[in-house]
Length: 178
Image (tube, rainbow, N blue to C red; front, side, top):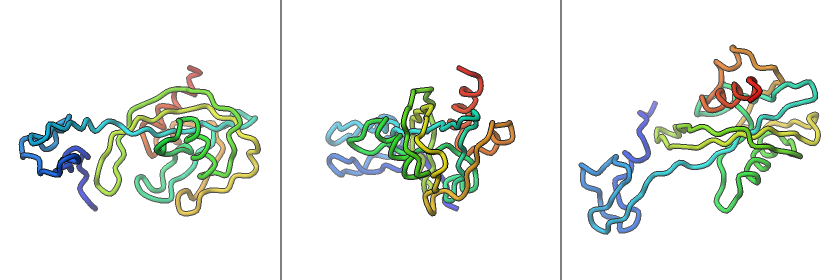
């Protein structure tokens, strides 16, 4: 296993001028280049998660088939792509991961998250939406990304098996009726 490090600590060269950062600057937020004065704040990237429910008031959970957090439960969702709105990303990610078409979505909450990919940890802001879908019977999971799904009224057991704390917190908020 690779040791994880924050993305800002992994940055050794200025993305503007290419000069190597001085040792005392490495890992500092913001990264400030002593050569050209460029500043990089390593801001969070945006991700979306859909709380998809059925007529029985059950929530759709999907199980991750790859790292990070392989084998744990999550919500359908993923990263927002460049030139894409949050709502477009939500619809695209739910469709890509589950084959479900979002018909309605309303904002629920957001939480910070850390995403460890191949040992580099990046800050993420996860935005969660309550979602209605066109036809729940058409679920087809993204091959290699997800390996199982279930419709449940989440219990503490489910919450303890969530891949990301932000997903767990969003479900807890939904369960509280907030």
